Length: 292
Image (cartoon, rainbow, N blue to C red; front, top):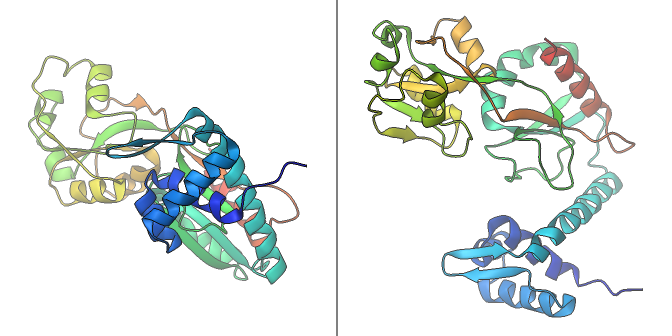
């Protein structure tokens, strides 16, 4: 039987691969940077494979490292789940939910009272993040993530089919009669999404030859939409984060054109004996609420 590498080597590899930095991994694991680097070197020697390219500005996974990472992460997830079950963290009344930050603020929060009223026995433990690779809660039984549905070793159930469109306050919207007027405003966007202002303008067609002002970027819709709500300019948005704000009159769509969104929100909620009653209740409620 092949001898497995020591667990601490694998933990150092997994943390370094997520952060693409020995220094950040060392901070997470409460170790020195040199100790993490040495453990990675020991792991590479034991495997006979190079797992990282050492670059001047950080790390880059090799093909071997990229292929090995999902196996290591899945193994740690299994260990964490089994340990949580053993020590009693899998309380049937506790919902361990890891949700995308913007989804939690703009979609979940306005509807959460209905879930609480229908399931008063459920105790919430919610952790939020912006992007799928951020993992504030390793013990989450239910995850809601944003992306293209491609996560190594995990399968997601698509929840949304949104489109991308501009939004602003009603006062600012009254000044915008077309794309030309829109491009005289400040524009807000996110750096990590696939649909930018350039893509929207190209798809729209009307603004292809017009001068586009500099775009201000925020890491999450929680920030860019707040800028829009303050009347600072026009933000790109989508139904999941903007519909409730539009319905209550705080935001408007100054031009009607919308383009299909390549990304979506996905539910990751594994079935099986380790899924507790609170997670099952939330999943059933969520899918019912998301139904067209």
